[in-house]
Length: 151
Image (cartoon, rainbow, N blue to C red; front, side, top):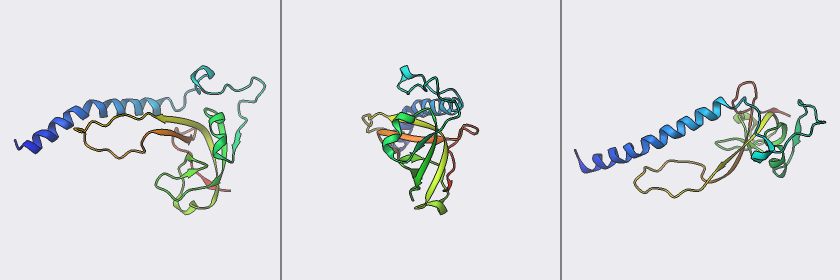
């Protein structure tokens, strides 16, 4: 076997368990998308007992995201013209035709934190968004990103 092929095969063999774990975590996240939101002890604000369960939180600015994690939200704002469309810094399923227009999106606000990690030089480079805090709004009926609509 050619040394380059052997090195790639070795790197792929080391990467396979990581990819399998990532797939498992992703599938588990998808399966739990319809599950109840985390409790306040897990860092998510608890809904006050006098608030109706169907009451939605209105988000019109990115600074309002953190307080609404795990809750039903309505987000109003401009949809970005990016590979992953966003409204007020929240990932959405947006039609390209709605880019740069005011839109509305309804769903459950989720938060995802990607921790920084040191890259193994033997692993192949994988395109990712990198470390940071990311928000998305999910349709509770489908478990998929919620679709935007014109405001």
